[in-house]
Length: 340
Image 1 (tube, helix red, strand yellow):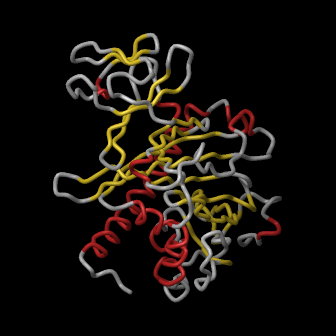
Image 2 (cartoon, one colour):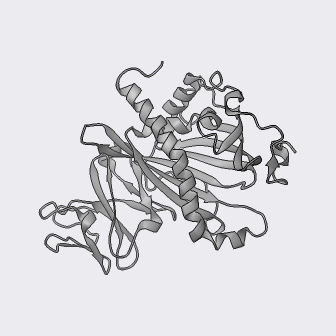
Image 3 (tube, helix red, strand yellow):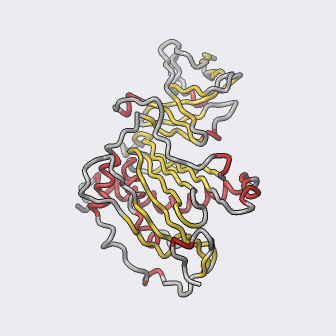
């Protein structure tokens, strides 16, 4: 049986490709992947408000004995939970003599500096000021008004997701030599999927793309894609995926038809700061939330501890390629050689 059309995807999860097309013979997509379509969608995404919120890591990574730490645009940040379990965030530099608080311990909800024992409970102290922090259940965000320079908002732009209790979720992290916009641009080019990732995607067709002439940042900038995920041999799972960029450093893929309808993959790009050569570094923090309305998925959720490493490994394989894509884009931009 051939790959199912979108209208049938809810009934038949797997398809058997009748005549697999060799990689070199698949339909070229370069004519459709018009640079101005990608560039204008990227430009509009960068104009959307973020409220100065940045993803710093996974909720699951906040431990009882040490803080979650990250450098965001050159600013050291630490996050931990106080004695009541509330999130606390603040600068990652001790106000006493500048020790890196990322190496300090959390004891009974208090962050204790490992240089001289200065204790921070989350309130302002000796020039150390707490930062606004938000836990969306999967990711932790910190608001850095000095970095973002926008009008601050009370909370981040969290994409629409399935209920956490209904999903198997995993968070993958990596970093590359590029800027956040290069990560976002990669995700706003769905045409590269079957060519650049043939081990994961086949039979890819972009069925809807934004109008490059649109000027309003609030227009619907969604890319709709019919694509089949490779399972094994000729077995594939055909779906429709829709990509959107709700804020400057986030791209979301929603599965809208087919197996796993309602599943979400969020890609967040967090600037880290320059490396030793002055080149920008950016963290990719990707959340996968898989759901299914099929019988037995509740039992699948009980195996989440086993599935999460597999989900992270699959994301890692894709991002080894996509970070090379983003790094190449930054290199060309930084040297004035980027086409167009």
